[in-house]
Amino acid sequence: MSKITIIDYGMGNVFSVARAFEHCGAETLLTDKPNEILSASHLVLPGVGAFADGMKELNKRSLPAVIKEFVSSNKPFIGICLGMQMLFDNTEEFGIHEGLGIIQGCVIAIPSKKIDGNLRKVPHIGWNKVVVDSNFQGKEPIFNSLDDSFYSYFVHSFTAIPSNPKNLLANCDYQGFSVTAAVKQNNVYGCQFHPEKSGETGLSIIRNFIALNS
Image 1 (cartoon, rainbow, N blue to C red):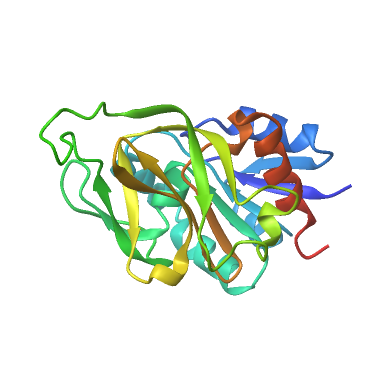
Image 2 (cartoon, rainbow, N blue to C red):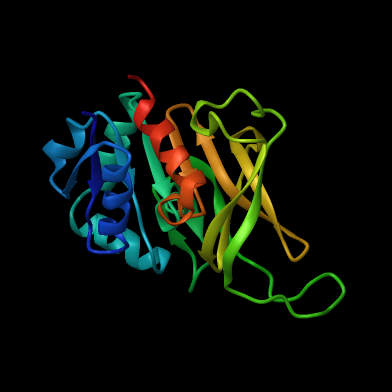
């Protein structure tokens, strides 16, 4: 049985994430201990809430350097929702706040107005179509068995903007605004949507993540 380590730093839906991985046949470990994180075969950084609060909790536990050390080991890593956003350099959410800086880019607010001046509903909540970037279609292991577009569940008000377009794994259109749905850099993945809340499609992504490096 595969063992998936989930960082428990006092924020987010760690138990629903753990249940989803267990449903897919994995054993899970919830921890904030550096030695357990560094010895993991697969690492998950979930998160719900404000970017600055998330980074505060990671820093309180001295985890940013630990996460970066794990990433350098080339073992599979995935950030979910806030966990994906914190992979980036910084955010403009409630002021400028520094992130982990693992993927270059910034996190910005989803504009509350559309191009035509009409209001866009923020936060972006609910199911939306995710479109895999053309550079990754048919080639990305984490999306094995899925079509090049699929529906997933989102809850967020901010979106990551990678500096390098090659890090953009998938996006979705939200009322005329392109939202970054997933990113990738080497062994590091990020999903803005919640695979643990995205039905069979999300479970397929989780199974594919578990299968990486196996």
